[in-house]
Image (cartoon, rainbow, N blue to C red):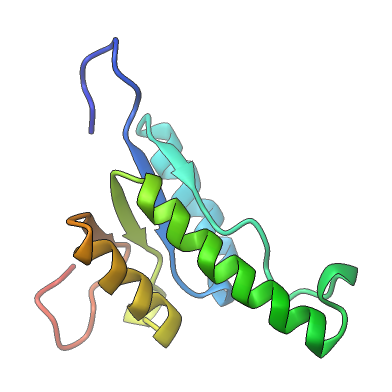
Length: 118
């Protein structure tokens, strides 16, 4: 995290399944309280909305949001994976790999089973 009062605060991006929407909110709260700028998913496709009310619209929105989230990773200093129970799905795994390819630090809210990552 940046400590110089003249520099911007660290930027963290939250990654993980939107099935953990409440946990995203909690993680954003703690990261904000720690003085970080938080980037997170802005939509939860698991909840009904007119913007993704048909399968075709939902498909387009999902693709757009996946790309948008990678751009958030580009902007961030590090990544916090919201993973209750150690759960990491395929999309999140791709985001983690992308972040690591950019040299970003990846942190986790919960231990990852079968890994030394916490």
